[in-house]
Image 1 (cartoon, rainbow, N blue to C red):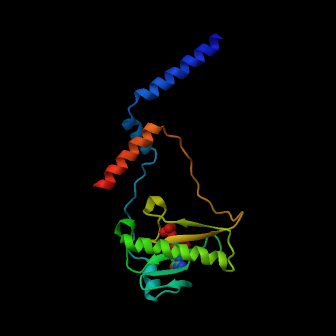
Image 2: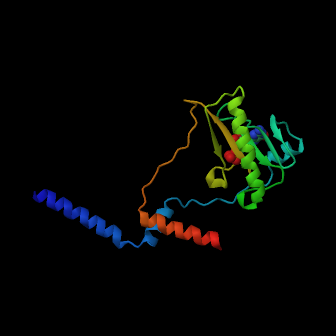
Length: 181
Ligand code: 5GP
């Protein structure tokens, strides 16, 4: 009984401690855990410019005045595609949002085509790496369209966390503020 009471006391102390930390400082601590910065060491040359200009080979599946899509040279699953804008945009910040919308639309069509084609996938993942820290290696924006079949070995590695609602609300407010600037 007394052991139970002291356990309850410890729990109350932990809860009080976590309430005592202001949401802002908790949010800052939470963000610091993920605060890797891009090195900025970005090679301005990309092979995609040569592919778009027809100077380098590619296995093209879709071509219109704004967008080109072709098979990835090192596919993570068979049929792995890259959808790229024809104008150079190194990252999302440089990409015309209308063109970003078009990349997504073409990605949607390709996802349907992959299911219908001999690739015969059961599912599709879209993936876009924006920045070195996010895994971007080619600095010409591109949307990966990755066909999925059971047991294909593809996956994202991540450790999910469980922040408190106050921290989520705090960050939501910060992001809403950035959106309205
Ligand atoms: P990121 O890591 O930048 O999101 O992805 C770059 C992708 O471009 C990689 O999946 C890589 O295999 C692909 N890639 C790199 N060079 C070439 C190339 O010359 N031709 C094609 N088709 N894909 C390439």
